[in-house]
Amino acid sequence: MKEVLTRWYQRYLSEEEAVVLLMLLVAAFAVMLAFGEILAPVFVAVILAYLMQGVANVMRHRGLPKELSVAVSTLLFFGGFLAVLLGLAPLVWRQLVGLVREAPAMIEAGRKVLITLPEEYPVFFTQQQVNELTSVIQAEMAIIGQMLVTKA
Image (tube, rainbow, N blue to C red; front, side, top):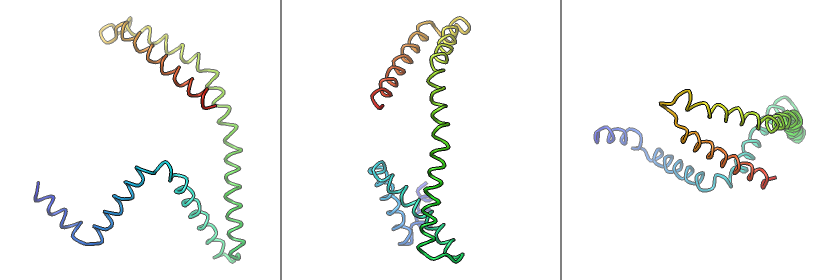
């Protein structure tokens, strides 16, 4: 095993650039773990700017002036954003309303299935296990409901 690790080390980490790259990757991973939640908007902004710059560069190569290509790229981005927002938001809202409306019936159907488990599969499920499971589910649903009410 030691020989395998030695060969791997000599093959991949014998050059200084490879060691520097490895250290940079480890440092970037550590920064992402520590500050990823804070830096997420910055990363999204950098990616969007990169994509918008690509669109602007294509327009510049087609003969548009720099300022106009950047303006058109920005307008395309905002237009796409608004189209997605106005197109998906009503659909998501309708789906969410339907879920909230149907949730009690779905929970009741699940409860009925849970109640029949000890009767159908007495070797695998006991009534006590089903009672514990339903109490855990009720507690979790109460926590989720409380979170939804406090976040709104």
